[in-house]
Image (cartoon, rainbow, N blue to C red; front, side, top):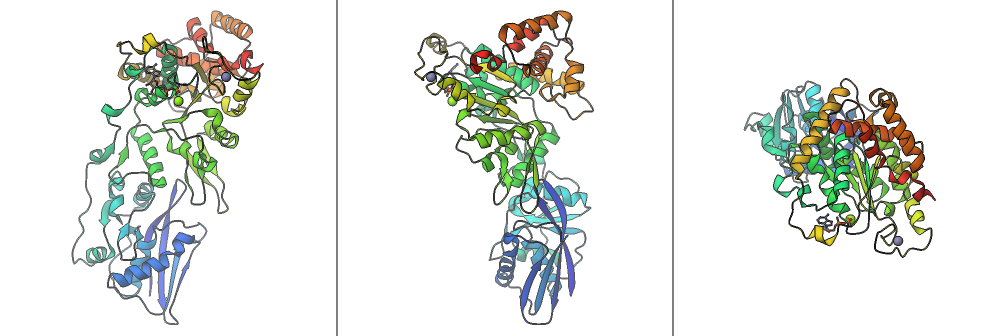
Length: 511
Ligand SMILES: Nc1ncnc2c1ncn2[C@@H]1O[C@H](COP(=O)(O)OP(=O)(O)O)[C@@H](O)[C@H]1O
Ligand SMILES: [Mg+2]
Ligand SMILES: [Zn+2]
């Protein structure tokens, strides 16, 4: 007898329809699994056989063939265990019910329990698109699936329970919740706040501008000056995510297997701070069992690279193109995968190995030329993606010990939100969302300078000896500063402030 059961597969961010076909014929007992299965899928055979026997089903005699369609897409992961088992039950006459409007996925334990799989959210979204009416999935995946409306979701504990449900013996309750009940928002009581930061007005201002325009940023300063402290507070002033952005982020965490069981939707922007010893695959994605890298886990949020020169050159170089494109493509033998990575990159570094190059009072103990060499460890193309450079000097003790509270994150966020609103209006109907991502033609259109502005910028270029590549960046930063002020035109003070954030373009570092 031949049967077909619906399932869903996933490759990178793309989910696709999978048909699980089973047929049982007379002959010597054997089990063939075809249709481009990887090792995890091939092992399904053993898990399904054991799960059937241990759940008091009889394992069919004869020649069992299971085919996964379409045959030209590689099937990865253990999620086909459950549909394979259902197909075998039906093909062997142990289950007779209509299956064409249902889909199944889940990994099986040898005892027949249904275990959590990665990527449930995009799979359920796909099932709904395909017009599937009922989806059966692991209990541990049910909360993330609940975001999808218009499809009946059945959490399955074990295969016996599923059989009882499908035969009408004992029904499983549909999972119905208010998804908002399970949304994840970072607890406001635990989000670090800018009011803790004493002094550091220029650095805070730079972070505000970066947040307002979506600019990547580099902080340079001696150890203990508060660079890490400042970076941690950046998420507290970023604009809230839209529902679509939240869904995108949640999908990535679903696929990487990092979504907690009790979370339906991530509403807080990601903040990731991988250590500099991370592998290139860990940072950009891929690996033997492919998964999104830190750069994609930071999608719509912040990726913080502390001690930037300590990251490997290969890792730094691997980030350049993705930063430009907002997505990362990973080549593999079985075809390439793409994950999104629209991020704000924030980096921090000491100015030299000892940490005190350019310090007003402490003496740098590095040999001549070493600070420049240290700076040169940062790959040029990556440095080129860092729009804002800001020096973070040590705060004097008197300021550190004062009781005075700085401005709160909530106050700063209000200004950021306002500036973002202007940009949303400006870029309506285009894929661009913020000033940092403007195309050259948009930069030309939206960053027109007055005569006075042109003159001042020219003078800055001469006196500060800025390189030509700084030009567009300064215009975009000045645009954001003007937006923060609610000014339609870019005025002289916006430009003079913007040029201050290009300190690394000066001869000083390049001597
Ligand atoms: N401006 C500041 N206001 C309040 N505390 C600060 C400030 N700068 C540094 N600190 C204190 O010093 C600690 C070390 O700062 P950190 O951010 O780790 O420095 P860095 O990353 O620049 O080496 C912080 O955790 C904080 O307690
Ligand atoms: Mg630090
Ligand atoms: Zn030094």
